[in-house]
Structures are given as C-alpha cells and as structure tokens.
Length: 445
Image (cartoon, rainbow, N blue to C red; front, side):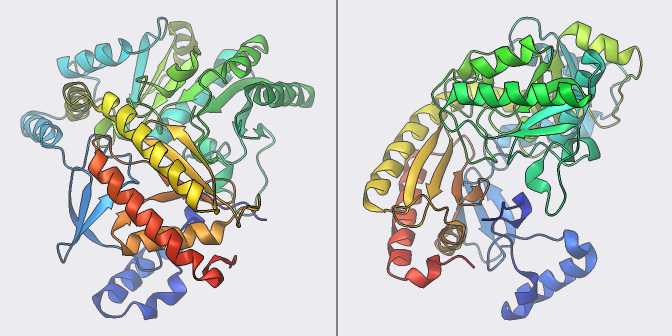
C-alpha cells in the first residue's frame, strides 16, 4: 500500500468541480485558475466559511460546523481577549524587533519560565516551518554535522531545508541523503531507541554525520503515538550519547494540548536541546519561536545571525501574551485533560461496537482513531476518507493522519467541551454504522 502525502489526505478531486454546480463550482474553478496545482481543498464537497467562534465555524448560510480539527485557533476561533489584544496593539504600534519594546521582553520571559532550566535564549519567527528551519541550522552548526533523523511519515514544515525532513510531503522523490527515516514508536520506546541508534550509525558511516533527532512527541503525522509517558527517554539518551541534539517540535502538541504538561516533551520527562513553536502561539496570528541553550545560539550567531522582519513585533507579542492569558485563566490545559479522557473512553466504547476501529490512542485533546478492514490489520484509507466526508455532511470536522491515511485525527481547539465531545461521538457512531451497511464504500479507491 502506498504512503499518503499529507496534502492528499481527504483532498478534493478538482476534476469533479462541475459536479458542485452554482456559485461553489465557480469559486472552486476560480481558485484553481489562480493557484494552479497548489490549490488543495478538503472534502468531496468543499466548505466555505465566513466566521468562527470558539469550537464552531459558520458557512454563508449560517450553518454551524463543530471544529474538532483545527489546532491553530488553540484557544478557540476569534477569542475576544486575543482579538482585543491584537486590535489594541495594532492601533498603537507595530514595528520590527530591532527597536526596543517591552511587550516582546515580557512575552519572552513568560515563555522561558515554562521551559526546563538551561533553555534560556529565545528567537522569534513567524511560523513553525521557519522555527524548524532555524533549529536544523543551529544543530548543524553546533555539531559540525548535517544528518537529521525523523520518523517515516513526519511533517515539520515547508521551507527547502525542512521539506527534506518532512517525508509525508514527498510524492515521488526519495529522502535527502542527509535524512534518515525511522518508524514511529508504536508503543515500544526501546524499539524506537534502537531504530534511532541504527540511524545514527548510518549517518556517521556515510560521512554525513549526525546532528539532530527532530520529532514532535505525539508523532501526529505518523498516526498519533503518545503512550506510555516516558517512552522517548531511551531515544533521547541515544541522541545525546551520539553527540547530537534533540529538537522538540511543539507546533502540534504544545501549549497544554496533551493535558498534563505545557509541552508535549514534558510527558516523557526528557530534556530537549532546542524547542520549536508555531501556529498555536498566536491563535491564528502568525507567531513562532525557537528556544535553546545560550552556547548553541551564540555559536550560530557568531557566523550568521538571524533577523526576521515580522517576528517578535509588538502585535505578535501582544497576541502571544493573550493566548497564554486564556490558557491560564480558563484552565484549558485541565480542560484538555478532562475532556480528552472522556473522549478517549467514548471512542474506545465505539471500538467495541465497530470492528473497523483497531486502536484509539493519544493524550489530552490530540487523539487518533486507527481504521482497518474489519478485524484485520490492513489499513483502511478509503474508509477513513468516507468517515471524514460522512462527518462533514453531519457538520463535524476532523482530519486524517498516518503513513497510509487511515488514522482519524481529532485535534480541536482547547475549549472543546464535554457536550462537543458527545456530539462528535454520536456523529461518528452514526457514520460508521451507515458505512458498515454499505461495504462498497469501504473498498480502497
């Protein structure tokens, strides 16, 4: 079975635009004409939204869709406190950070206070892609090597450098010689550490050398692997014994999403050398950052330096501060833990009734539901696509992940409630029952 590029999961088939009819067909065609092959839309029938609030998105007709997919608006779509902070600061001042302004200093101190001791220098970016790009450059300069280890279906961003370390983006090209791929951990931390050790040896034997292991500690694009807490320890130890750096990509699993720690790596009790942040920082406003030890950043800056015009502006800082305010004031990390536990229990109850559900895994409000053909171990990507579209028709939005695109990805804003979880479960139960009565819908396309 072929691996599925991340943009191909649940993608709209543009050759079917004529089936849409009316204004929707016209807008889809206009987009295709303007964007060319880079135009990717979700669902068999694309959606068009005009506003959002909390965990809800609304189309032009006023229909509400429960958003259990988007982690970018981490504290909820258009949260009033975040909107007010951005608007207030934008009306006052917005300049690049080569001028002094107190807001970004306060924000940097606040972020650093949440990190392990030693990660005391922070550099701001605009996106997770930029953050991971800078992190790889830091690692290469610090270690004097170029080799990077990532998991087989990883996604870490879309710059030229980071794309090489994002195998799930690749359609028909082989990974770069400087990149080694290892299987996702799938509950076996010792096996994962063994794969990492073997990849380190390969990189060193090839002459490329080993600079870094780059992972997000919930292994989101690989299909969501979170447990047991602590399983990453042996792999990180192997990285440090091998003279490399551990880069923790927190774009997906950070900011309280896993429910028990502010950062995904915290669940595993490991010490990163570099931490990268991205889209959830700004609740939709482009904010990113890299945190590291002083000696790692200083060596890099002695040669290259780093400047990003739109990073660390007063507006970016105000928005970032507001997001942290909401997480703290509204108890969103605790909400992620409580609602996530309820949701996992209910998903496992569904698994007892639906043979197609092989596994339910994850932590907090980041869960994966693995679908297979019956009680077999054969991945069922066609079924996953049918489930996503069936939920879309019931006004519930989730995503897909995994090497074969057969894992339902549930990753809502952190304000997701128990009532929201109940609605998701009811809709998923209904879709699975309907598809079980129509076996043809489950055959791979």
